[in-house]
Amino acid sequence: MQHNLTGQQLGSYKLGDLIGMGGMSAVYESYQTTVRRKVAVKVLPPQFAQQADYAERFEREVQLAALLEHPHILPIYDHGTDEGISYIVMRLLTGGTLSQRLEFFKRPSLREALQILRQIGSGLDYAHKQNIIHRDLKASNVLFDTEGNAYLGDFGIAKLLQVEKSGLTTTGQAMGTPAYMSPEQWRAESVDARADIYSLGVIAYILLTDELPFQASTPYAMMHKHLHENAKPPSLVQPNLPPAVNSVMNRVLAKDPTVR
Image (tube, rainbow, N blue to C red; front, side, top):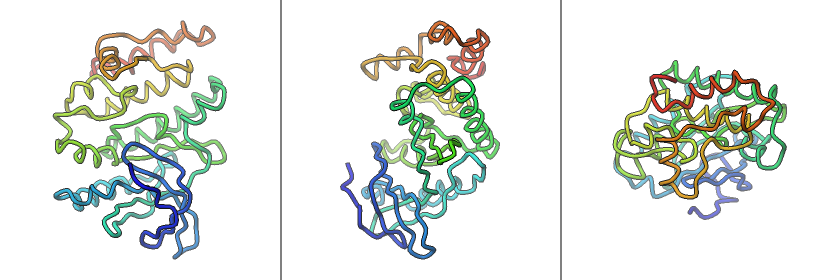
């Protein structure tokens, strides 16, 4: 786990309060001194900089992600490495994440859920047309502005961290967050846009039912369910949902990626 870097200067960015912490990175509300604006700075573990060819991969993945210009993709402003610490600078969004909203507020209405899915779905479709796969879609990677608009974040980060954790490329390891991982990710196969569609389906299921499609107490049990079990039809979990939702969820959560 990284130690708290609040108060430290990275390039032209003064790190403020820690506003997000994941297994492999930390996010700080920060101040860009050159243009006098608040930004979000994601800091990656310093030990990564010691890895062979890391600098080249860091530049490549972040630059690719920075090319994504879409109303519902969190924009990347800048990136760099200072004293062995790599960081990525993004727009500061203060509306929280989808995971926080689901934890602290009631389940959104069907209309609200569909709006969120339309927004992040349009961003994901745009990224896929640019041949960029997210690989780690989850509720904590969906962020909101103060007007309630949804944004997808962390494009490129999953692939960047993936190689660091095991030394392997996309083939040969399971990569993602267990509750959201597609069957092909669990099998450590090469993935394409259809793995993201599966993860988006998990997000949709949560928004519509207030439950995960698969729940388990261990990663192994979770893997078994994603590989071999079917999710309960959403209309059985929430009887007010139209039955047509069931067929849509069956498709996006299909075990076979060719069906999605």
